[in-house]
Length: 405
View: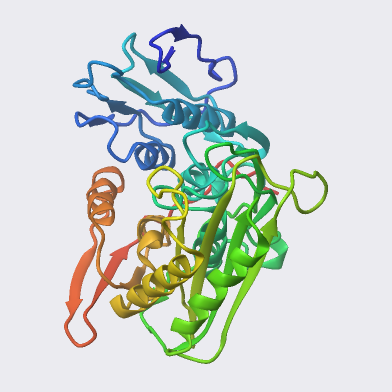
């Protein structure tokens, strides 16, 4: 059963009727600290083929204990992506028992709740997408923009994380299929939503070779996109102009595209939801092929109307990118946990990566990977350029769900 926000009980369908995989009985991963790292724990449970038990999910919240709507929706998405998964939730929603099935991929459609961006769901399932039985084609409906303060946008994931997957060998071989791609069919700003995103990803048998991302390189160009929904196009141009004004102090090769939508027309391109929104995503590329990206937007919940000018938004976005560059490393902060997880799944050889400042989320992720995969990272600070060098021995993960020919 799934408990919604009104504490009414609604049936939750699982794939128990389908054939369950013949997996080895493994030790259950148990957590007593509630919904911390909810998505990543479920993903790690699927990849390690180990049952998961989470207790005390907001048990101290007397008004609304248990799972939130977006977490229940993420469970439904995983249920559609797998065959043979078993999901058990107690009457109050404060305890979850999850037995993972086999990833099947294929064509999947999912509607996201109103309080979470589609990027929140995409970020969660990205490590699972390459290891299914069939290539994944996922269509998500919901909010695409204006929640970047809490959730990554599809533009950020497409700019920063997808090229990282290719560097790990996912979609790098033309025989395996086209590289992973995120296509925004229709924009939808918060809170009204109404957007649509299609994510496609090929499958791989295994990560072909260990990754070696230690050469930072020099910044050679900056690219960006300003997205506006139901806002005059001049506002997007003002954001791009102010951002370029600050970035031109770094280098001359700066190009920022404006993507404006003013109506709800439907078709192959264009159109947006009912809510206005303004956001910007910037990415810096180095001479060694590394990409570091940041994003910001006007938050409709905290920013009063007219309190943040388009020029202020552009300067803020440029300053965030410059700060990310200052930290150093070969990847940006938001892509750290995904990169380290893929290193754990890599071949049984040493993979190395250089990052800037380790985020708190990444530190907790390292503890989770140690517990689930028994992979320890060697963390070494480099005082010369104030970065952190991480290395580990991969587990040699193989995609057993993929059909052999």
